Length: 95
Image (cartoon, rainbow, N blue to C red; front, side):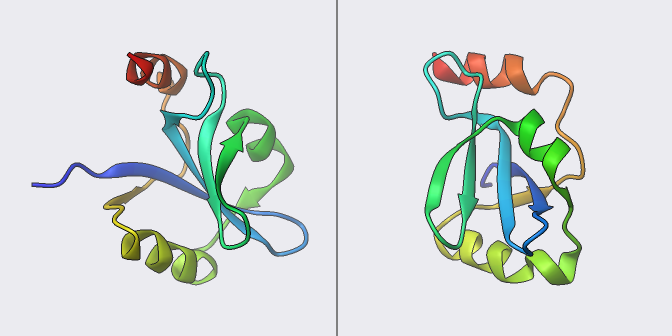
């Protein structure tokens, strides 16, 4: 059985959809999480800042990005909010 990766899809004012992986660390101290977008693909993001500046993406809005992610090997667990322990989980995943 493949472990699923928690993902949150967010929509920017310009219509761009980003995927945030709240439990995957993208920085040495675990503060930033991994993010993914059609343009630019993988990168780092401060999940709290992104969430404050965006709104939740609807399933029809993030469907193409979800297909792209599953096509590159992610098994997605789409969630609406970052888990309370996301920072601790990112830091634990650094080890």
